[in-house]
Image (tube, rainbow, N blue to C red):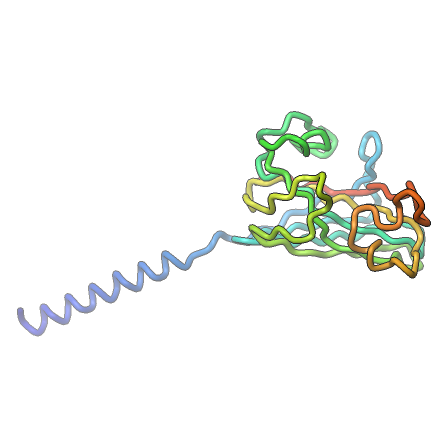
Length: 207
């Protein structure tokens, strides 16, 4: 083989290898979606001047909720309620364009996961700003033993419900529990018994 032929062969192999490397390192293009924060009451009225943003990357998601009209000095928490397979849901909510709702959580075919996202003490102005990330396969911070917790599976296809939950007034002795658990301080015999409830939320439908 001549020197020219060898040189052409080496360059061709290098070009092919470079193309293969580039092809195997390309990730899905990140996307952002916006949704209003609504009151979790009949008709799902929008909370004025509120917002929810969901950032989808190849193997994780990040959410940010900015809302208000909470009582100062109370605790609120945010939760991931993700339906990995929303096409298997059977309880749509037209007001939020969602395919899924509460009754679908118990259906294993929806691949639902219910996990803690963030918690905060409400400021004097009644505003909250909640933010969290969740990676594919992360099974930490499951909400309760009685609720499904399969983790995030389908970043783009999943339908994301992010309820904002009121935990009642701050109880200093158990504040860390109020900030990180589904019913901290609200169980029978506790200071805020019966007061924990999902009051606002946002929905980001699948892509």
